[in-house]
Amino acid sequence: MVHKGDLPDPKVKSFEAVKKSSKDPLFIPKVMIFNSIAREIKPFLTLYQTDKPMLPFFSEDLFQLMKGLMGRFFKEEPMKEATTVLKLLHIPLQDSSIHKDATKINLGFSAETCLKQLRSINKVSERQALELRMECKTFLIKLLEKLQNKAPVNQQLVRSMRCLDPRYMAESKEVCLAQMKRILRHLVGANHVEESVCDDILREFREFCDFAALQANFREFEPIRDRLLISVSGARQRYHSYLDDQKRANAKEKGVQKRKALADELDELKKKRARVQNDIGALEKSADEYADKAESSGKLTFITKQTVCVALPKKRRHLFKTLRRKSMRSLLI
Image (cartoon, rainbow, N blue to C red; front, side):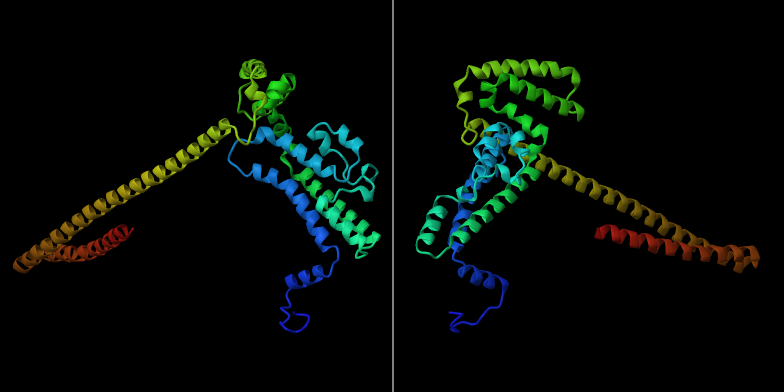
């Protein structure tokens, strides 16, 4: 309608992008490719948007995710050799010699079907279809590079946390023990665990792995549904709630102490004001007495003393005003 002049041209970048995309015969397959990849990634992202202690399962889940994405354009041989997440992280993604032929790149079922239909009615040339597959591969490489560079599994400690996966404990005792040793080395190095207790920890962990191997619920453990994770998650929430309560209590206590300090300061200022007021009254009385004596006796010494007694109240009144201002400020606080 904008093209026909029925509606004004908004002249914004977003409209131009939509306008350009609508003219692209491969726009629908591109959306389908993106949707296919997004649907593959979404379960992983959804699973780890949680407060549950999911770190023991992170390494294996990321391994499966990356392997699935790489399988779209990688040959079978390098994928079979990548038996661990560490090996998977070290696969050179840009090495075209281990990539599939461009015609075999997996775009996703819907995108493949749509592309075939477009080819059958000659809306898309073979070259355009090939370019689409190459663009898909480029996108996947960029995505996987981000995962390789940013993923926490690059850290040995994170990979070793898999030893706390109940399924892994029941199936691979020796591997779990080796990973637990690596965890303990990190903890000892960070001064979180004393080296003297590591043997005890390993012995208890070994015994627990033996116990886990005999338990069906360990082998059939499901991280998403397991009540243990829910319980631990609840404990963590309670701990955070406790910390919040402590923070509020500390803030309240500080407020009480501050108010008490201000009240004490105000009382002290009031006492000082009272003393200054008494001093002023006493000096004024003395000045009057010295004036009377000087008048009756005619001695200059009484006049001098009277002058001093008159001058001192002025200074005392200045001090009195200062104390009064401080008292007012304390009341405002």
